[in-house]
Amino acid sequence: MIDTSALQWSCQPFAALSVSELYQILHWRQSVFVVEQSCAYLDADGLDPECLHLSLNNPQGELLAYARLLPPGLSGAGPAIGRVLVVPRYRGQQLARALMQRALQEIAQRFGPLPVCLSAQVYLRDFYAGLGFVAQGEVYDEDGIAHQHMRREWPAGG
Image (cartoon, rainbow, N blue to C red; front, side, top):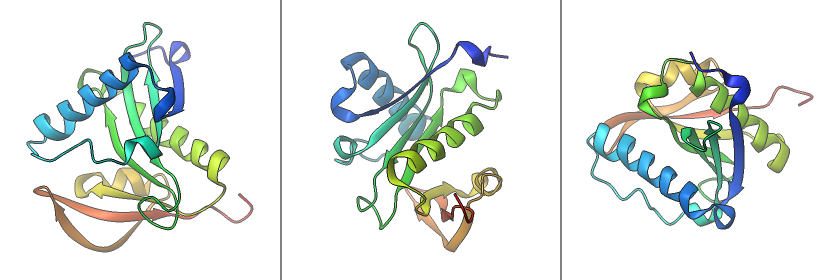
C-alpha cells in the first residue's frame, strides 16, 4: 500500500499547469481512455482550458490519479467531474475514492453547493453511488462503453 501521508494534491487551472504536469495528464488520459479501453476518440476536446485539473502525485511528482473539474455552464447548468482515472499500477489502494472526495471538496469550495454531475461507466455506478451520486435517465453508449448520467445533491446545510 502507498503511504498516503506523503502524497500531494494539486488543483489548478489549465494555464497554471507546467509542461511536465500537462504531459503526464494527457499521457495517462490517452493510456487509460483511448488505449486501455480501446476507444478511438479525441481526448483533447477543447474543454481543458476552461477546467480545473485535480492531480494526486507522489513526492517525486509522478501522477497517481487525476480528475477534470468542469465549472458550471461548461457542460451543463452545474459543475461536473470527468476524466477520472487512477494510473493502473496504483489501482486497488482507495485512491479513486480519495480523488473523488477531494474533487467534491474542491467543487464545493470553488462553486458552492450546486448539484454535481458526471457520466459514469455503468460498471462504476455502485462506486459513485457510495459517494452520494444517483443515476439519472437511461443507460447510453459512449464510444462503445455503456454509461449512465449521475448527479449528486449536497445535503441540506452544506
